Image (cartoon, rainbow, N blue to C red):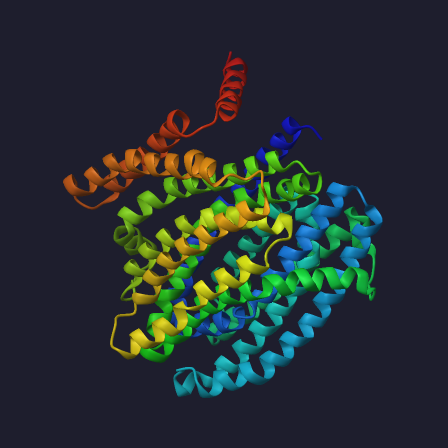
Length: 510
């Protein structure tokens, strides 16, 4: 496949993922509001902390997903279909074993922690136990579908992934609409409905892969030559993924222990915003990631480095267009989004937006390290940086500091993590230049951010809060950022691509 065809595929996959993300975002924004209204702040906090506690095992999910996608994409790039089949079988075998481990941990240590450590009102303990069991089953279902999602990503069938995730969002919307109708415990009903949705989505992914990918029709594999590389790679990445999940969910638990479930609701909104907004940059990276791995497998490291730079720069600028209006109008937006805004929600969400911006650089650099298979030192270093947020937060809470502290630490420490990833990628990939990355990615992003922020910030100072100001700030961001990106940050190749597309559109109109 030629570079031009690769670029077209990346563009096509990016559009499919963004279409999916916009719909999912709109549905998520609405469902969160209705869930809060229906469950109430306390029950929503209980739901958030319980599902969040189970999600602490999500480091296994992330680790396995990354390893599976990397090895499958590598074998596709090498053209070895037999090894691809064996890799998929090994992935399913490891996945089954991990699922059993998750159940054992969840039903012992996890259940003990729920009953003896979390702050839950006495009259809601029994419901909390049932919700916890539902959360474990739902998580195992997500684990079981990971090999199939990895296959879809490796084959770059992003439109299928987008379709099923849209179905997932629509089903969750229907579940929320049913909540006020069903006259029973709302928290329990919501948990059961989410479990049913997980089962449906699991069946969809599995059915599609079995119909379309030959390797997906295989069974399990016990050959160490295929299981060992996956386990070794996953093991190297395990600490880094564990630290990311522990940082997020550990903060959630500390907020519960020191401030109660109401603060978990505020944290839950911030995490929801992080997930929604961060997905826009992750979608772009998801479209680039298979080609980054394939280029490394084919020894096209110059092109690989270019794709990493593109993913980092345009991922950041895309987030800037979204985050600038959100950051400046956070209080007004939350007042529209939520009928009752819990304390600290505005501050949590604002700092979370900064965290997501900085993390977009780090994630793009990590994709290159994953493609090269050089993740041991970066995983240990980044993991230690991110995990240190938990003990520091604990001691600061003990000293009486406010609940905003861990969110500030997250935003600061992710900059350190991005710096370490930049150095590690240069060390392992000689064709990657730190100086060129700073010149063509970081500096243009800083310049465009400053130029694009002038009118929105002036609007905040000279206009009263309301829909008109929100509209002007959003419009200014959506116009100024793309224009300034074209003149101050876009490469000649990208400019030519944009001009060709504009020319085609003009011809179609004529």
